[in-house]
Length: 374
Image (cartoon, rainbow, N blue to C red; front, top):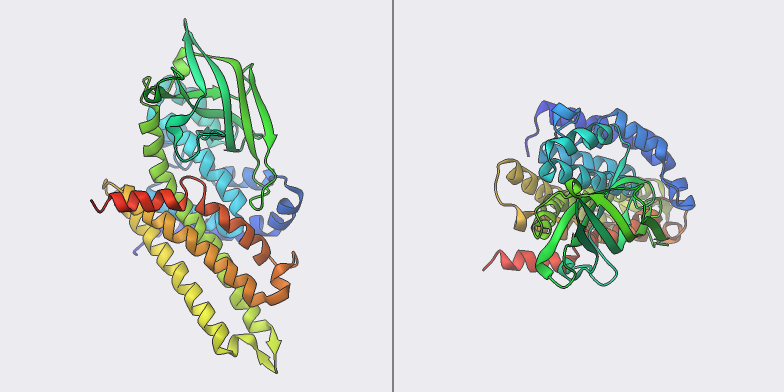
């Protein structure tokens, strides 16, 4: 796919940042479970924390192809960092798309600078793939809404300063889901359990507990009952970003496997000379390339104003499952060393699985794709 000179330039800039600044700290961040805040500040310096913010508020206002290229490059450095960035961008996208001018002016310029970090609170303990079953309620009380409930799997749960929240205005009505902006320092909002995850360990994932949290009515982002359709429209674009991240992670694993196959010798020659290894690398390379092309095709269609519901799901489904396959083979090529923390492929393998789960599981993507065939 043809890229403009500007798109090539930002891709190369972010790729260099990922290799020079993100990759060297990724292993330690995974080990300690602490997000590399210096890296986040570096992303802000590159204007990447303002990717989905209009230029009038200091943002980059990236097109979808550029957004995909950035996500792929950051994930090449560390998926945990790319995930934190994409969720922050989901939050800024919601504020941009659904907030009024006063909310734009109050929040977007600071979020462009990286602080406050954004979070996106849709899922609940009993409402994952079917958000219409959520029980979190935002009850109107004069000029305020009073929020009660629990949200789960919240990326940036600890480090965020603002939350885009989805709640029902009537807990008994599935059609009352509404979108709100909630400052993190709101009384009655507490960070709950931090998840101890298989992978993506440097990205904080927590519950958020709302107990009588009050926000001004003007912090409602959508009309009452319009929140679920808003969430799904934002997540469709977000799935292109997750597909791109999956490609970046898979590319990192492929590159590591190629390097190792050229260096590691058995039976008097590099293991890359053996046909079995060559076939693995060929399949991995094809999977990465196909995932990238599907992702960029969905991004290009979005930039052209086309409906991309099916294309985004195909890209997310193929690229995320491909990332699991490619990282698995990268571990296999490394043999016993691939099962140790001495090599990055072990972390790549653990990180890859989550791409088939968040922002819509593989099963949800297949359902969307099948619906496009009717």
